[in-house]
Image 1 (tube, helix red, strand yellow):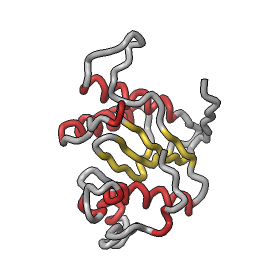
Image 2 (cartoon, one colour):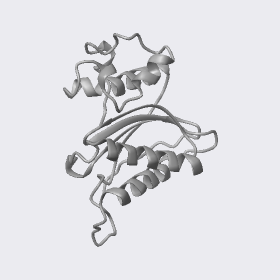
Image 3 (cartoon, rainbow, N blue to C red):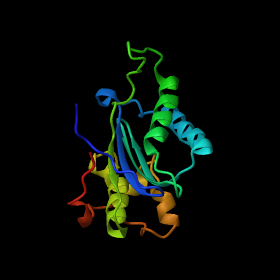
Image 4 (cartoon, rainbow, N blue to C red):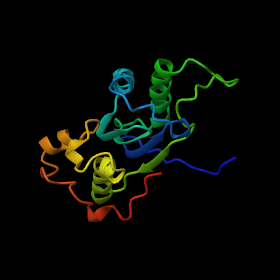
Length: 172
């Protein structure tokens, strides 16, 4: 058994990487992305959290969340999001009643300060360029980049080349 420990900070901000089972491209269609968005929206109605940034790629996603004060239960939220999406994608289960949609675990990083938040924000929005899906961050349709642009967090040309602050960011 792993000796991995997660950090739980009520009201904390967290970066996540969540990967599909065996990196199957289960998130490669508009319909599947819509199902995932519906799962997020449903969970947020009963277990609120703020999505600071998100990018959905064919076989994984990255996002930044901020939880409400006095609440640190991000594992419960992920369990519900993954479960709700999985029911729409694959009905077959194993002897543990698991569907082969998501890897069991996910990567989590607790955001420490504004600089750490910015590095992870940039990493999220640059990820489709890094993986060669688009030439510019603004071209990827399943990203919060345009929202961040409207908030004034970026210039229009941001992400045309690799940001320098990503060297120390661990994503998974």
